Length: 309
Image 1 (cartoon, rainbow, N blue to C red):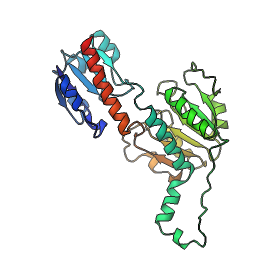
Image 2: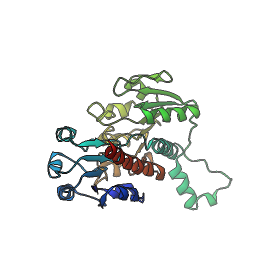
Image 3: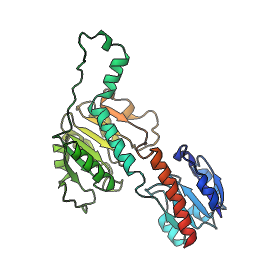
Image 4: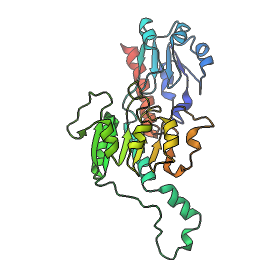
């Protein structure tokens, strides 16, 4: 059996040796759209994270039986074409929950505690000139008693809610599908959540109902000093609107996901006048070492299960 791994670079230094016992493995660090057809021509199994596998790609691979998406989201696969051609598609769910939840709080406390300011203050030598033992610069608040609004109360959102509650925050949520019900926390409208929350975190998928869900009016509705964290998908927050409003309204925003990844220059968010209000990480919330190991192990498991059916 021929297994083709198309974008191994996305797994970092995680070992892929476990695939070797399953067949003849060919590994590419990255694969462009122009290279995909040629590289999968003889494949029985394709392993992809973000490389698009459309009908044309499937047509070029007559032996293809299984597409393994080494991720949770599968919007890079033409599912109708796969079903029509009798090709199975498997993904991996739940592998990164702990990592994403942890990174949510990492972003929160970096912004909430003005960590950039205080780190630079000490390293600049300014603290050495103080007359007293402490330096009180930008003030920060405690999480206890604050309102934390969660957009998307799936597995990740629920785990964030539990930890936020442990810190003493009052949690409410907005269901982007309208179907999610959870009696532990207050369900509310998007407008009320935005108006009342001191912290807003997004853990929802990108779809027609969530695209640009947070735009000009929603950003303007936020409390002064409130924090907005997007750990869902780029495109849920309107980046053009954000690049304007973050300079005229004192809100703090943490993003791990963007519309264009990696971002290209010039990029509106890189030109704002108040960079201290914005913290961007390069889509790393899911990438703890343990999460990547779980992802690869589960992908190998999907192939083994397919072979035994």
